[in-house]
Figure 1 (cartoon, protein in one colour):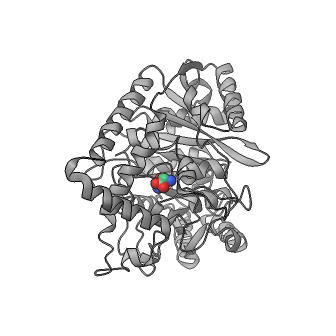
Figure 2 (figure 1 turned 90 degrees about the vertical axis):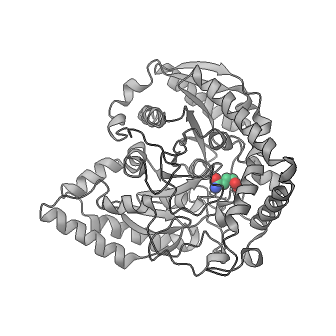
Figure 3 (figure 1 turned 45 degrees about the vertical axis):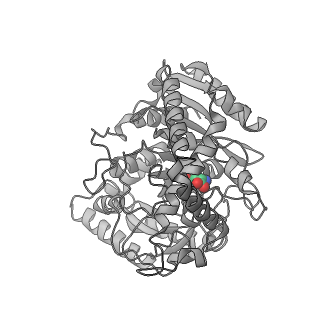
Length: 458
Ligand code: GLN
């Protein structure tokens, strides 16, 4: 039963929302002490809500699209009455005083928010090891990192502690942990989902998006959270497609679809990962897709450009954590990676009067965007690995540049503002490997169709 079928079964009373939730709570109690996917949960409130939904269904009242589904939320998205810590000591005691737009939309559709998930401190990382709550374990590859920064959301879905989860993706933080944990993760086109109520890492890159174990779950959640938000000026006013309906004929989606394969994406990836992706591409080709070989000459420019802009925007976003209005003074309590970004961001901002770094990074970003959207003119989607390497063992000492190297294939979509997703492609000795799809701005639906088509082949 996929997620949409499950939601229908709750609606038709074959399943009960409260029983669905109870199963998850049991698994949370059993596995979360080791996995640390959730950092806070409210079982009683969730149970009460599930019972209300069951009652409504019994009484024949209308319920929302997410009725009875259980959802985990990354700890940098405001949910009223939960601790919104962004996994930092800075906000250890900060309690959400309002619901972010995405949360209001989930609640309006009767989704049950069970708890807040673990993450890298302020979403600045790729391993979920920098959390002030301690690291999350990878449920599909125990002892290894789940990826990051939304590692808790990915692990929660992978270990069946909830139906769906939300993460944020600034340079890969949804797709990277989805890849490492063997689940699906989707980063929408910049502006498709409201960022209102999200604690910024780098505001010109950040997007909120869903995790699920199947495409129907991704589509359903996008149907709920996508769309213009008058409270948030970067959202796009467009006709949101019916994502759930778009996966109805997965067999047809691959016929004539043009898949772009970029040689340079393979060059930076481990051979075992490339082999898996090539097998998948061959399979899609046999099912009617066309493969087009492409080159991208600016891959080396992507990480420096992304991190430079990230440092500057993050530095600016952190100036409100000065310990006066709420929280602690960030520099006094944060971890090494967050401090590094604050120092670098401050330095770069000071040098900016001469346009030494930031202005150049913005120029590089424009170039990357132009080149990538240029490649996408000839094809429907780009297909390749999501992450070039397998996840390391939790606690391995990595240099910052080694950690950043995980992001080389995911930052492109944030620099260009395009939609991108990761879907399970296989495993190397049991360690999951994800495949990334990237498309033109606002072609989010095309990725969903492709995910469903690929899923139907396997
Ligand atoms: N790993 C990247 C970074 O550290 C991306 C993080 C994210 O997407 N939130 O910035």
